[in-house]
Length: 429
Image (cartoon, rainbow, N blue to C red):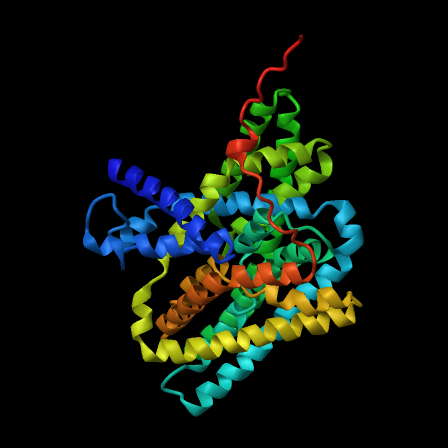
């Protein structure tokens, strides 16, 4: 226990100290946290096997999954704040159209490119893996995007549309992956299952939205019994923890396997709560401040989870580079086309695609499911390599696009250390 606590302290302090270095290069703090994770992970400092200095093994990193899952739940809960009715009236139709269209275009483009790779070099990549990677390409990382927006207090039409599109993207990506993975399994085994390809994915989304709506309503009903800010915040934290726990449950109804999507459940909880509670803005702000250390740990641990051994495999590198190029082209082209169709401004049309490049947790979860394919290890390693690149480069590109759109103000020089010092007493004479 003491080793785990020391590791967490080193992770938190290391991430914060490294953020001072990345600030000199105008890089987002998210990048610092991920690099800190790599440094204290099992392939750098952790390899020294000094207890407490870093994570000594991947098993030790995986032992922190309860923290990363909890942090992801709070991130999704905060993103639900973007789905207020006032926002949906302004950007709702555009966000849905863009979210669906760019995800489908990205999947089709990556599928096309990787199927060509399969036809030319069948020993390098199988057809089922190519199809599965195409669906995984649709997923975007909400966590990195939200952290960049929070750090720089970005606000404007592009930022508001981006947050909605990223949230919708996860639901669309879940459907695309389920259908594609079902097709891939059919090609591999010859057994087609409409249940796993269509019914279960749709049921997962419906159940997730339903559970999220119930939890959001219950949160509002319970928090009304408390009036102090601290107790209302404590109730909110407790409900998010409960929601994360419930979203991990799985069960069967007959032959149908039922489960929930943690992101969709927590996002819907935040959406329902924000739309029925008149004081939700103030409460969400307090919860956001409470979760700052948790979010830092999320990214540091995510960095430690990145497997550097995959860089030694030439096939992973070749397919990974092709995947990254095809996915990036798909996201940028798909966002551009969908923005033009929905008549978005030129600023949004030119910059939205780049902000959708970050990829992490959702894609890794899909890759873990795809490991059951005959060459599922290739899918996992390619996604790991892509996540390594996207997570280190993506946040900086998102920041750059938001600056170009004029939605990030120049960083101020105000120091909380000096700003919050007590003022000298004023003489009454």
